[in-house]
Image (cartoon, rainbow, N blue to C red; front, side, top):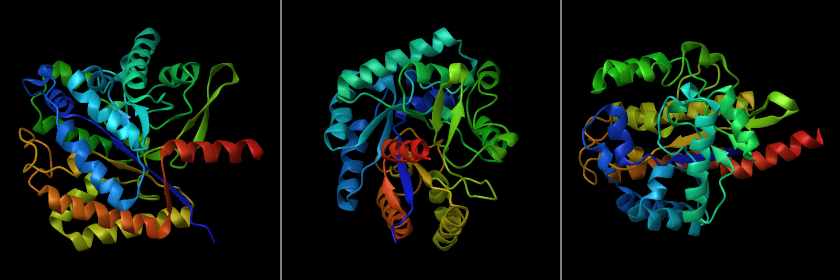
Length: 315
C-alpha cells in the first residue's frame, strides 16, 4: 500500500528580513546569511535525498551577492517559489495595483536569477487577502500557501510584539500578523478557493495539528526540543497520527533559523532557539524528516499541487 503524501517547504527569510520585522537597526543594508545557509542546507538535503520548495524573497534575488546561492538551489533540483519582494507582513493592506507590482517585481527577478518560473506563492507572516489570490490567478500561479489555521496566532503576535523594537505604527501595520483566533477554524486540508469570474486557486495551508490546531512546523519543534526532546517527538508523532487519522496531508514548514544557531550567525539573539547549536538543530531536522518519511511520501509543494489538481479534475 502506497504512503500518503506530505509536502515540504522552506521560507528563505534572510537575516535582514528578521531584523526588519523585529525593528532592529541596520536591516536596510540587507545583511545576508545565504552564503552560510544555502551550502549548509544543500548538504543536509543531499544526505537525505530530499527535495524542497524554497520560497524566495525577491529583494534577495535582486542583490548580486545572493544570486549565486539562489541559483545553487535551483541547480540542485529544488522548486523555487515566490515569497513577495519586500517581505512585508501586511500584504492584506495592499491595493490590487500594489499587489500586482509586488508579485510582478518578485516573479521577474526570481525567474531571471533561478531559471525557474515560480508557480507557488506564500505571504510573509501568513498574510493574504482575496485580492491577493485574484492577482495570483491572473498571473498564472498554480497554488497559494499563505494560510495558517491555528488558534494561537494572537499569542504568537503578543510575544513577537513584546520582544521587538517596533514602533506603535509598525505594530498597527502588523496587527493581524500570524492571524486571528478565528483562523484556527479555517480549512486545514488542501482545497480550491472559488474566486471572481469562475476562477479558482488551490490553497495548500501550512499544516497545524488536526483537531487542536496548534503549530507543528519545525520552529515549534525546535523550541520544544529545548524543553525536552522526548516531549518534542511525542508531540510530532501525535500530530502525524492525527494527520493520518483525519486524512490531512501535511504541509511542513521550515525556516533557516530552525537549522542555524548563534554559533554560525550573529546578531539574531532576539529570535527564539538561537542558543541551540547548529549541529544539534541539524540532528533534530534529520530525525524529524526520518519520522515523516516512515509515514508519508515526501514531495515539493508543486508536485503535491499537481497531484491534487489532476485528482480534482478527474473527480
